[in-house]
Image (cartoon, rainbow, N blue to C red; front, side, top):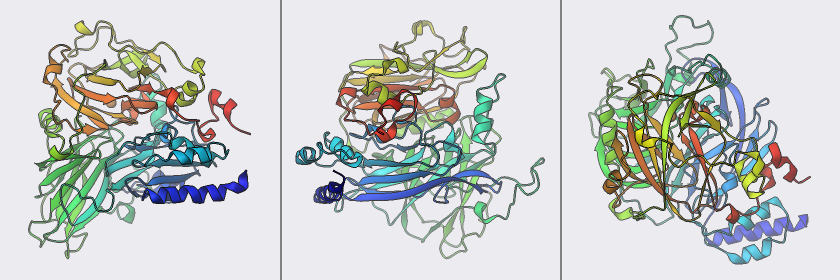
Length: 601
Ligand SMILES: [Cu+2]
């Protein structure tokens, strides 16, 4: 059989070429290196020596292959392709505990997925299903599904194992339109940046603190990074000598060079561990044109609010005094904090790139100006020419009450008083292979008992919760509404912002509201005309956010707060749909828990 592989490979390649799709093949080595992204030296997870890692550039319909070598030596890894829906390849989602076992040190794992529709080619299935290499299995199964279009746009990738993302394992995915198709806006140049926050403590120390009694909170990040570069004040008392070097070129500010008069598309992603951010370029307006891979009805901002897991494209025209440079500022908002603003230089060519602007950097919006942030959320609508019609009714409504709780003295986050934990055997394997003893079978509630009387403005009278690894099972092809309801935390007069991210889908954002969601009244005010589709959305303090999606992607999908420590503390849920339609699983995702029994010798 083995000698047929090259032939099959050529055959598949030619089929893919017929569909005008290419294979984008990346070989990545992931390891720890000492780096100083904010001048402070610490262990950073790099991809091929870099953090942020290489940008994946693809065109709609391309197949992306990433051969990931885990050279972390003493640590597992998994990478999630954030915003890629993995239609027909749910095992490539990269979510440890949900879609795969962690990748062991020394192992190489192949991620393979398509970034758009590939025309279904039934003959390929016939040719390949009788053969037994993992590669062929993959393609055979992939072609069983009709691939739904994922828009060209801006996506992200990052670690999805423990709290590993904040150690620096992240990057951008840029998907271009097919040749000959045009976007509904024009620009001269295209650039990408990722915003991040940065801690000096290791992920291990943070994770241990969050799970210990007494609870140790991670605190505010030490700095904010713009495209992997920030600045910590090396004169801060208590910094050991040799750990902080303000002249290290690794922490020289990021420079965004522009030619006067030209228009730039700037793709901005946030992968913060904690911070909600504002982003602005001194003296320049930004026109928002894309959100999470969808075109928006353009609107102008001085200042863009962006939450962890979101991406936006903005257009900026270099139309100010070209004799000087300008500040680019990112600021932590939504919680009172001690984190200094992140700075980069908006450099007008031919001024020297590192020439400091002659002005004081803008101080940004107040951290507690919730109204400004809600207003931006409300301003994001679908571009009129790119509306995906939203189903006018839903089959099921799930209200997810977000609360902070205690379990046996530990602080947790819970949904409907259930704090989520990941199972040891990935759900995808458990459900597909009927290993139902590997997780708790009683599903979490669609609405919390006593929801009608729950006071979201006060600390709950009983803050105790339970933890569980149970999941929601959705009927295939049904329309589901999710209401994210925010509430008071364990502290009086405090409610936080949570950016929620759904794997495997884009959802329509049908409504935001203040206070408590009214089940009979609020749905009447949903935007069912031109709602934006997104994969990540904030729920604002003491507010609610309503989403609608169609459970049409066979697989098992995480839905969770994108704040690293919040998900770690249980702020998540998992949805299963159409598991019977998932093709044979590749054995490469197995090998942990009860999935060991399926690993081929
Ligand atoms: Cu959260």
